[in-house]
Length: 355
Ligand code: NAD
Ligand code: TYD
Image 1: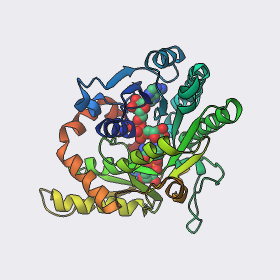
Image 2: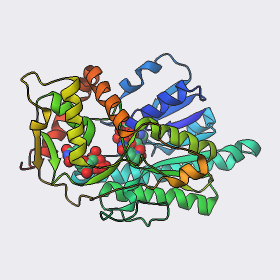
Image 3: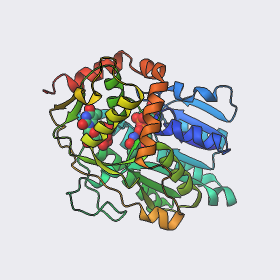
Image 4: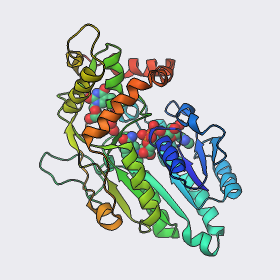
């Protein structure tokens, strides 16, 4: 077995689905089911005995120790986190609770389990911690992309909490010899992406005839990676990554936000033209910027390519087309995730942003 945490969220659920489809070992999936966790993402696994879902907190050491003792996984993959920068600005507390304290407690439970393993089981065990490029801070326009040597300069409560978790993981390797691997990935997009993040929000708002809120001048740059490529990179790092190492994962797809939003509009114009005519671009609205907004992220993904032979399979053009199509075909999923809590968040984050 492997133990996946956060496997009902966006990336975690894509990972679990891909892993089981590829014939990997069984998965124990530990997820707290916060607003971002959704069992519907895993519906195709209902009745599949290779998938065991457990609702619970990575910070619940007793539960994690029980799961480890019962299922004896050969690896733990930690996807569980609070993940949205804007939410971390409004309410940082849960980010510290889950990303820092939760990761610490998970590490303690895993250290105790690993400490009792013997021989091949001990040799083969891995803890893979999934992290973000945001820990490196913000780049100026001509700066080289982030390598694994860049220093950590996190700027938001989210990225600071992820940076803290990365440091703990590193320290558990250095101090206790825990066999860890860390991945730092750029912005993902694809199926099951919760519509509070840029790309799914723009698709969902466009189709609902709502404004498309671009923060500031829309010239902030992110590197975008199709979620399936992130999952294949994680599989590869788990398989062959060197212990204690970190691997940057990216799509070589740096694009300003405004261009991303315009691309989404162009695809929707083609695939689902507006009922009243005209382009979805007419719905673009520039709104008050995010406080402390990082200007640019870019990932240098040469280490994972050189050492592990991993490269993304999708280009941005193929990945974004698949993604827009997925949202057009999954209107029911979109409707169901837009609960009362979702509407409350939309109000908290956007009502006070003057156009
Ligand atoms: P997400 O917010 O969609 O999902 C997070 C999942 O973790 C949810 O299912 C949630 O219920 C669960 N969770 C939250 N707190 C928990 C806790 N205390 N115990 C157990 N489960 C808990 O996030 P995502 O976009 O899928 O991101 C997954 C991981 O990848 C995160 O660690 C994130 O920092 C990292 N990451 C995300 C991106 C991105 O673009 N989304 C990029 C790089 C790295
Ligand atoms: P997001 O998807 O929240 O990811 P992150 O902040 O982790 O990079 O945002 C991606 C970019 O899009 C970021 O620069 C902020 C911007 N953005 C908007 O312009 N409008 C929005 O409504 C949202 C959610 C994000």
